[in-house]
Amino acid sequence: MSSGGGSGVPDDVVLVHTGGCHCRRVRWRVEAPASVVAWVCNCSDCAMRGNTHFVVPAARFKLQAGAGEFITTYTFGTHTAKHTFCKACGITSFYTPRSNPDGVAVTVACVDPGTLDHVEYRKADGRNWEEWIKRSDIAGFSKGNAEAAAAPE
Image 1 (cartoon, rainbow, N blue to C red):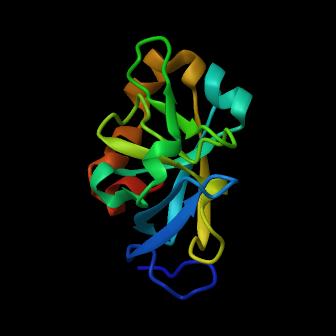
Image 2: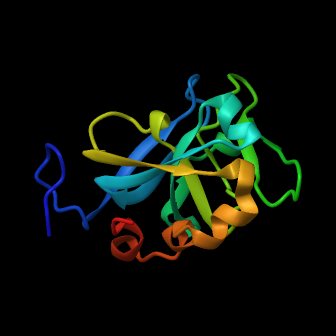
């Protein structure tokens, strides 16, 4: 077991991270390790927004009271991914990804400072999704097995 960047917290210990959108109307908390794997996706939506996200099981994500009234959702293509964003400021701080419809993708840049020690960036080939998903391990990240999902490729 190695320790994370600066806090000395072991990589496999689950912490509570908080975050949300720019105007702070959409706030949430997520349980995840101090060291996460984040996906840099090149699909048409993520590429245009510059979204980089890590995936957690849906049960580890909770919206703060009142946040739901400021969320709207955009879908396209297969309509499996639910791209949620704040109605007031337009920021996508989390969404339901096509790769993990049983999970939540949390935008790394929207996590409040102080709890993420390390982010390993991996490429997600959303432009060639059908081919990429067959060889990717991303589906395991929403299953609750953080150690298996965080293992190097």
